[in-house]
Length: 158
Image (cartoon, rainbow, N blue to C red; front, side, top):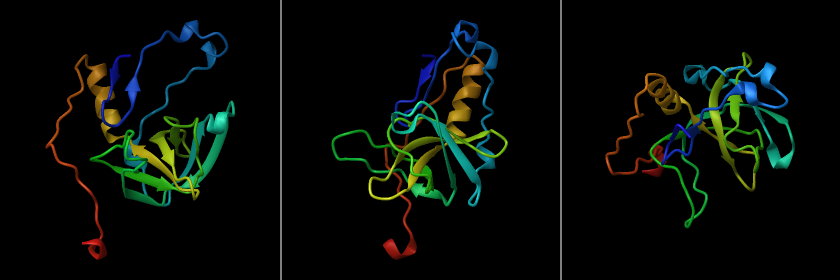
């Protein structure tokens, strides 16, 4: 691996596309377009949902300000970022899959889903793109912390 983010659970690795056995001539870069994410954007999550070889799930971005999902008390939970949300019903196997707009640009990464609804949660790409740009410039991506956890609250919750 070239880089692995210890908090937001994404990474980059390097490989030779010519050594791919079945798809070497079809490999194309996916453009990262975090600025394209907006409420109402039609999206497609392309991955291996529930162990299927290839699945394409559709949805519409409904929120761009959701707190990071809370999975359990004993495992990993992300923090200090907002997540996007749509009712695309993703499940195990599609984590890390690109969330694409109608132009094939990635606007987020699939991170998880609710167990009792069709809500799916996506990691925004702002930090991902910043890390990739640093790597392309032969720099180590910078991670900083204020050693606090931010949480978005509505006026009614305060």
